[in-house]
Image (cartoon, rainbow, N blue to C red; front, side, top):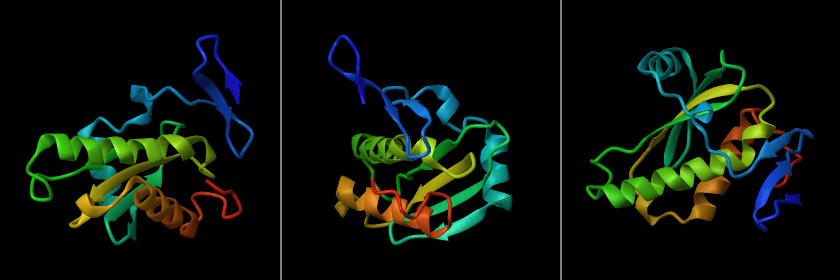
Length: 141
């Protein structure tokens, strides 16, 4: 990995050999329009995990994008919901450049997610993505 003059890691090379800006989370990585999210929910393939439901379709935008849903039913406190979202975005950011094809993805949190650690999120989501062939099975994260 290269380091910027400030000492922070600014770029990394993904498993596919593409350079990914590791500090960037920009708006191009998020599904924002309700129509895109609805299309993903209505026509997308589903991955059922213990703590998540993942819906995905091939991306029309040319890059992988993510939308996250954590309802107040799961957690009343906004700070806890936001922490869950931050952790999910970080897992997605770490593998975003490695997807076989760009995908639009909606991740819906399920019950008992509050008891999970970051490593549990990472293991569960990456395992599900590898199982569906979205990520290469040989790459270690």
